[in-house]
Every structure is written in C-alpha cells, then in structure tokens.
Length: 207
Image (cartoon, rainbow, N blue to C red):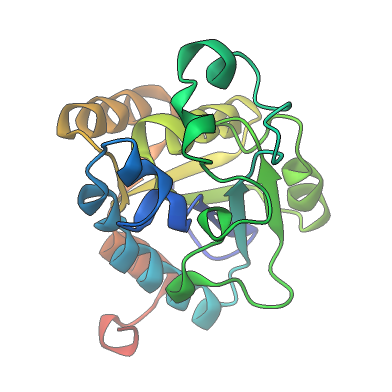
C-alpha cells in the first residue's frame, strides 16, 4: 500500500490527560505514563504535517459516563480499579485531550467507551462523508486502542497505516508484538518521517 494525501485522514487516538499525565488515572493505577508520553512529539508533528498538507485530522476520546454504567465487563469484572481512579470519566480533566494536541474548532471528535474507535461510534459516518479511503493512526496505547482500531479499519477495507514512533505502550513487549501483528496483515507500519515523505512535507518545515 502506498500512502498519499488524497482521500486520507489522520486519526489521533486517545491522547488524553488520563493516559499521558503524571497526575492522570493511568499513573494512579501504577502504569509508567512516561512511556506513553513518548508518543506526544510524534503526534504533534503528524498533526502539524496533516494541517499543512490539507489532510483532515480526526480525534478519538475515551470517555465513560460518570457512573460507569456504560463501562461493561471491563470495569465491572476485569479491571474495577478504573472506576476507583475515575479514568476518563465524562466532564473531568482526566478525559480531556492534552493541551498540545487540542482539536481545532472543526476537527471531528469521536467519543468512545471501548478500545475500537469504530464500536458504537460515528467514526465511519465521518469517514464516508469525507470520502476517506486511507487512515493514518497515531496515539495510545499501541496494543489496545490503536491496534483494535487498526484491525477494525482494515476489516472495513480502509487502507490502514500505523505510525510506530507516534504510538506508545506501557510495556515494550506489548508495543513490539502489536506492531508486528499489525504489520503482518492489517496495516502498513510507517515512521513519522516516512509519512512526511509520502505527503511531500519538508522535515524542516514542521517542528
């Protein structure tokens, strides 16, 4: 698959305070958010390049209702501590997208309460309306929301591209396995610089 700018969108996955700040819920759960923060510079560069290239930017936002009644078995049975630390509860700072990647006024924001950005959301409606065939994914976490969304995108016949140095995971082995699995059948794994080259963006023009 070759990536270009036509019929292409950048999907920025779950770049939120809860995952990326030392005061966020993931840190309170004991995860090393410093590893997740490594995705921020790559995402910032991709967003800037997309805007310079006329490529639409779409954001996803992991959000639970304040009472977590929409959280399902993951919170009820598998990981109830999510409720205890108020991970990405609606209306909280934890759920907000980090300041350096704040969406612009007309950027679509897809709210979700499951790892896949396609599950019970309006993402596909946005993509159809925008006539998108190619999806470039960045964000966190590589092994959960990025991978699940990429797999679902591929199975819907979107040409799917995952940017390795603009995603991050709390454990190296999970990061490595996710990218290896995606690259085998579901997506083409690229670097930020390779995306820049495909979009004809000069590296010196984007910080």
